[in-house]
Image 1 (cartoon, rainbow, N blue to C red):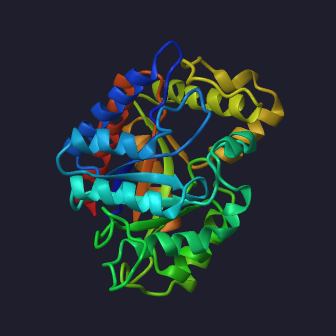
Image 2 (image 1 turned 90 degrees about the horizontal axis):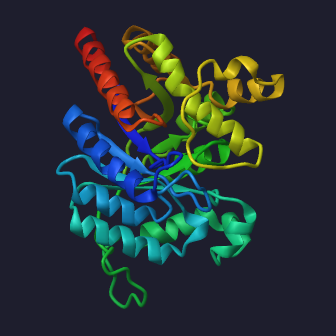
Length: 332
């Protein structure tokens, strides 16, 4: 049965604070660990009023330090923002602190706007060097060779699994070429999903890390006792997307009844496309949606995200999904 994991942006809700969001992330991670989710990933975004995970490696340490067994990682680190050596040292340190529990997903986008990318003090052409930077970073995790002048300490000799993230064919091609697991951002950019899966699977070359293709797909899941309640929870994400695409990013808004009813056609079309990979509803609706998505894509793992305004509702959504997944596993 396809494994389940959690993607958390550590959302800052309207009227709340980053401190509360980070506390909520740790609480959700502890629930996810208890419920049997495989891994808990956090994402790097900058200059976003509604996301508290900008210092991603710091938040990973916060979550890993408060849990015991669940894998914790980055989904992902936006490598053009960083020197590969710095990321090798950061994740080498995390692996030294939490052996066997750290993942490193790498993305090519800046995770922000171009003005903020400049403020991050990285060359904007660094995205063109993404393949070379990935190879350089992976090299720092290898055991040091005699005479090696630049070393990642901590980092060298650490078996930190590296993933390639993507929302286009570029990441699929690179992951296949390097023989790395591939995570596709279908939860917000699903347009190239099917083509990317075909490219990755057909061009995959085995590596020391992975002998056959392994795909993890992002999926929005909002589960509640009833379809109506789940739809209401989903409206927070819908509002956030409209605000973001309209140039008005902000904190995660509270849910609104029938939010999409009065939207203009352009906004409706945007949401229908960007959030097409979403399962919203009661336990039975979620079961059917999950089953259909797995059957269509053949995903090895689902990276589930649920940006609910109410933290208790978010925890409950992941509890419902875990129960559904267990029943599906038994049936299988």
